[in-house]
Image 1 (cartoon, one colour):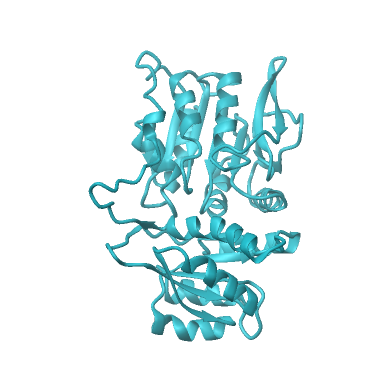
Image 2 (cartoon, helix red, strand yellow):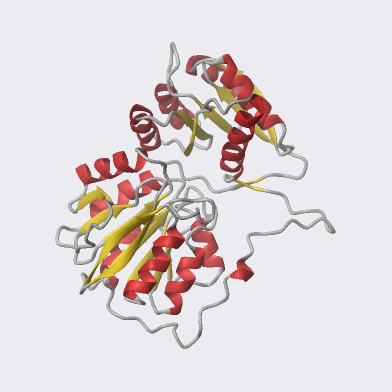
Length: 367
């Protein structure tokens, strides 16, 4: 995983993007979509990885958008070269929403790609296709940069942390023995999960519920990849499945994963209620339901990711006495989600990725 702190974009500077795709149509579509944003400049295009590697030192891009299937040198081979020779260059893969596309995208993320977007599909018109692409790609490019401060008198609304008041003082510090672990993660998540979940020991005494922002098929394949490397059973959650100790459940793409009481235990409830924070599955939906079923008997972990999904859920859990752990900025691909929790004063510990599991084990009474 390429962990590079956000770079401050100087006033008047633009984010330099190199578009790499063998399709002329896609290159033009991406270029037009990005050129409309004043903070982004497409500095060049390339039709395959070999040409793109020649152009990187000439164009000095900040970000690559990279297709996977290309002649002469495909995206995965180019990615290996980029991660070796240009470790600070951000890479966003273009993926098809198919089983093969999902599998190859997960492989790209394991090789160090920073994020991915779905490849443009036929939206019925060029304008709709560009609008959809712009809506997905522009935020994913900007997430790696700190924008210059607004000119006085032209303030831009921030993420609105004031909407999340501090937890009542009487609830803070009152910890009970945890009964569940909830994990929320987005950009950089597959690699982060792949690093820490296999270190959980067999016989871990708590269920683990994971929301990773991904579409259908991707979450299923992610669960299968993790199951092959973890000492605990890992699976994509299904409706009504029991929430059992020592089992890791991944929220399926396009469904909120919630827990509901089931006699003396709990089970999974999947629904397609509206997205939260533009996400489905959403971390907030999971954390809020954990608060309803387990109260403060929970450990909530917020890992690398764009945006602030999980902030409201962490506030709910914190108010009930749950433990809140956040990944630190230095080890995060994007410090949006954990940074929002830390800025709101909700995190009990702010930890490098490698220290998350030891802290979970300590709080679960396993150390």
